[in-house]
Length: 295
Image (tube, rainbow, N blue to C red; front, side, top):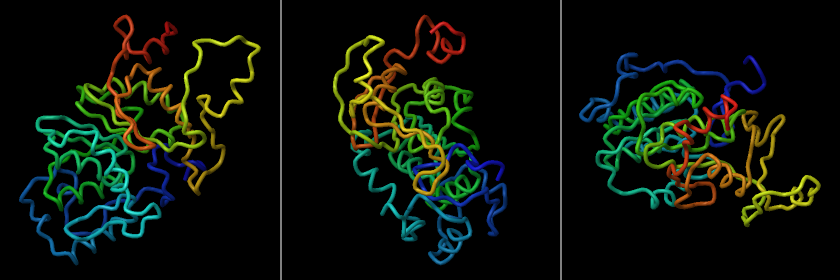
């Protein structure tokens, strides 16, 4: 591993295997693994013992999926994850997504992509930088007979994807990034409808109103527990050296507003559903103004 951090886009705080695993030793060809999944694909009718074997061959899973009765991470340290979060988040997303397009950033094993596709989304694109997660997501989608596109792409490059999406899922990635606000500002270019944003939160979970400005000599506000704050992890947190920045709730909401987003709902403690409100100024995105020195 080239540095203590390794890759800069791990997900949802898990103690992960280091390095990138290649394709598993299974009967699927590389072409089958990398094509979009289609209903009636023979893999969707595999018996449980073969599904279980392939789940094991694909390495450690962080998403506990139900693949025709076979669980991919039945002993997850967070319980039935991400289902335990989704049961709250799902209520903030329409049950019928017919015709919608979805971008799942840091898709991991594909749980959220699968759930959005089950609701009828026309197109679901999951991106990740980890080959192991992408292989897991492909196998899961194919096993369930769902057509989901998967692509190796960093959040820092997501703005180069063509077009916008009705729903952009940014789940459990933010605090794994060394440059989180830059990534969020860039990602907003892809949000055509809603952004579903989830991050680890630490510190105060309370918010309050703050003045528009404070005098230079006012240092007291920085000692207030509810003041927007980000905690920097120099080395490691929860045995995970890819945890870089962990915000409190006030910081999350302040950053979302600063990026030009309007918070529509807060379905569970770590998740916000937003829509673009003022993401552009004088015809340019905020990040473009910042990079040009005109913000």
